[in-house]
Length: 455
Image (cartoon, rainbow, N blue to C red; front, side, top):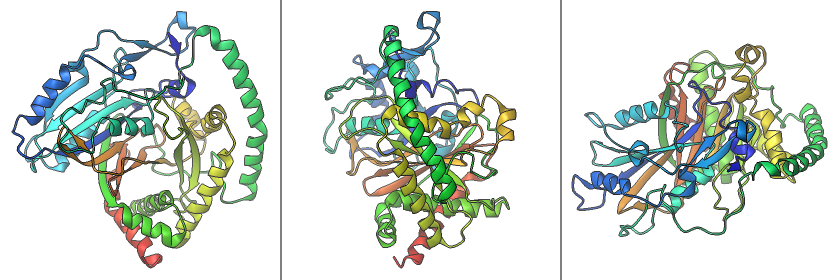
């Protein structure tokens, strides 16, 4: 029995009915030519016959007196695949609207902690003949980068391949690094190393705070304005999704001397500004986004979490799209500079202050008395660059679903795939009315950037 690494356990502690802590992905597939009406049914039946389950899909969380109250991972030797893998059909007329409504409901339900923390839903009934797969993984199990790398390894660039495994099946992998926390006897050594790492972090924190007072580009926790995004949430979700060509976003980035991620953030900032103006609820101060950054190195095949967080000024107080993008670029550059030279534990500790809304979720009175540390999460996770196939079915799109938190009712996550940037917006169904209106506002945001920079 191994202790759960701190970055993984952080996602179990704050979980509640109102705040499920799992991430998901919606994939759309076109069946291979000549496939019959039972194509998906056969894939479902075949998946239930799997016997070689990968380790990360066999383990479940556990803590007790024998673990001194610490979270651990234990292997589940009796996995019920019919519980984890579901086969569903959409009601007529089988539009994308019905698909998004189903996925919204599925994403709002908790995973069973007495079982391994994952589900896969195979969904047929789309009017255009396509099918969908919605996968759901607890964030304690793996982060978004790990999830996308897993998906990429379980698909194929060969449309004729028919031996592609399900994501939960064991597969060849490279050397593993030791991401798990070790046994109870290792606690004193871990604690000593952690104390040293945190002590050496203190001067960096003081310098960062001093920069925040001097430089407008540096954003610190508790500088975000109050907004309609920062309210208590329910467990009910609404999901909206759409894709934009990467070439359009890259062209703006080149013209503005900004990164692709800067342009994505500027699109989101423009959409949020329009949305909040329509609700007559735009704060005078700029909204602040928490943006996760992956700490995984190229070729690292470990599951688990290796992620830090930085804060970005979205410039929503600026009416001019060019000025807004410049402000976002400067803010992101300053935030990234603050993380340089830190090890993973130090970044996790620094990020803990940024992620304090998860802790404040247990104390609503304290949460209401303090300004929000940030207004929403916007995450950009690089995905596969080439078209992929699953047993001959072409992957047409993959849309991420992430986690709204109590006090942060909206999450925007973006994934790149085969020349597109695919946006997944997840919000509290009760707190944010008409979430789908953000989709045309994102298009308007990109169009105004193109106009501003002459693209």
